[in-house]
Image 1: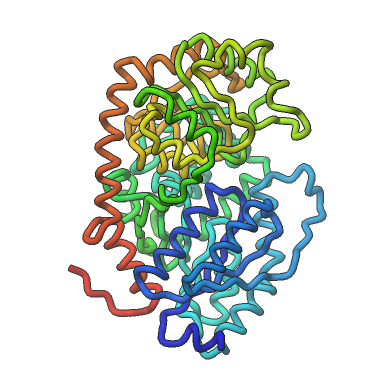
Image 2 (image 1 turned 180 degrees about the vertical axis):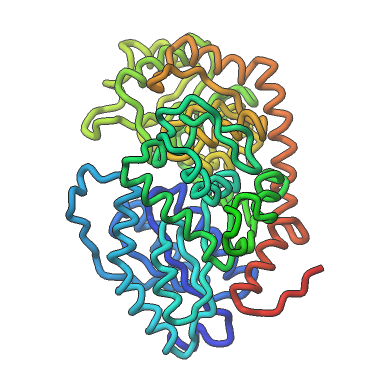
Length: 473
């Protein structure tokens, strides 16, 4: 009986949003940690509304594992109003609003089952579900897949928008946020650049409701983000007179384990043939694509650098073959030192490979943690969302990345690709970033082992989720 499976264990529900593997992976690893190390039963309340086939397979594999995880799928929800032009933040927020009655039905069912839930964990665009959980008096927590620095920004955002009347896109000053280096206004997250945009309004709305959470689980570790975490715990990010600061649990890095290694990957076989730490890995994540012109310019920059490279290319037009996007003769001219992989490569095994020495990255947080865990320094090339903010932190605060020069429209010229690639792989800036990220790799490993900072934060958070008394050391 299903109820018997869940008996005698702490039981919680989690409502994740499926918008990119970089978002889904950490919440899946969080779920697995609760089950494996803290004896939890977890019910995932899922909508496959925005999922790719790969994400659906990923969730189904998680649910079919030997862990005590089950999935309850809510009915399909349509967002019909101007969906084509609606930004993702607006679309997700509207989806959650429409999902409220379905989630309420699931929570009602769970609370009347043989094993009621002791807590509800929601994704950070799901603050509308605070209202649903409150009807059942269920303590609600947030899982924040991004860095503590961006969490600082979000919690501080209501104060910022009350003090700054212009759109960040029109400002030429730097923004002060407790725990962060100065952030140029135009490097604030994409959704909040334009005050007239509905995405801006939703972002501010969610930020203003974050303090309603009992606690916030953050995919970071204390040694990586000491300053932002201090600002969070001391409540420096909140407006004066705000409610109390939620408990903060830095429980990362939550990334795919390196054991998830495909044995038959051609790119890993190619890496086996390259000298140690010689290859620049180039990938912009699962959600970003470059323009046709930028792909050609990046290719010419990589060619001019003379470096070994492994480049994952996603076509901006799905029906286009990747080889059609590259400059004529590029692949034949670089055959001895470069490999172009269409669409996807196993990123964790690539970064962990001894031949990989650098990572040209879009500054997505999951990719950043994977890079830290493999001790591979980065070239910061942000595309959208909070990635420009991450770039400032990675370069100026963490000092594990170097910046590639961008034009005002975000375009990167071939000579700047070449310059950044050489600096990372051969220059003094790359050497310093490499030394620092090696230190962080060790600290990340210690954080996740028994007695480490993230291990302890997870244990404290798990006790709170189970409504057990704490026994702090």
